[in-house]
Image (cartoon, rainbow, N blue to C red; front, side):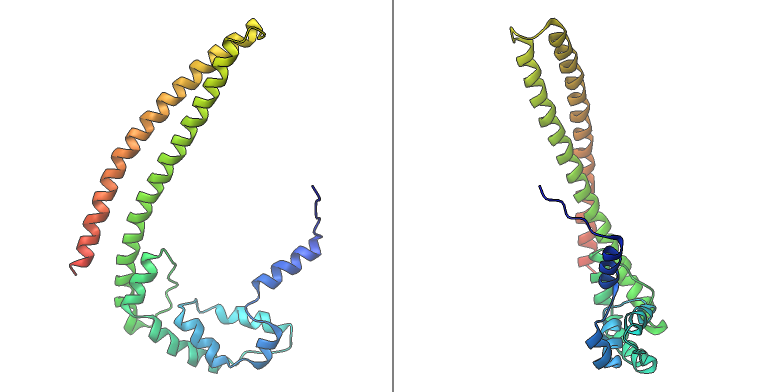
Length: 207
């Protein structure tokens, strides 16, 4: 297999390029009001302009702050609506506290409601993943027990090998028992989580 080596300077260049918000051509031709609007309508944090400034400084371009802020203010008023707050919360996305005071309360209330849905859905998903992981471990242990069984009946295996196989089988069987108990507990928790999720969805739908 061929290995590729990346120098520290090359890696630094790649990371820098990835962190830049704008290219050279964009910096030189951009409408800063439009950039501000796009950042505002996406709900990005107020320090986003600093990232643009850093990206464009390399090309000798300074952002038009007043135009950017005017566009961002316009975009925020579109972004900071309750339906967007709920959607962002339900998707598990971050809110950066960027909404103006007259819109913030309704937005945050909707965001919190959506985020509560996200938390409840994620709890079910995490439990499903935990159950699946334990089932995978059980299958792996069962396969190893089968292999150990072959060792025990193998005429060419030494007595020491057979003893180790018997001990390993007992330990793995014990581990399987613990995993099955954990799965049973997780399944009980999942029933409760699903019930709570469905109840919350019904509450939200009734609003």
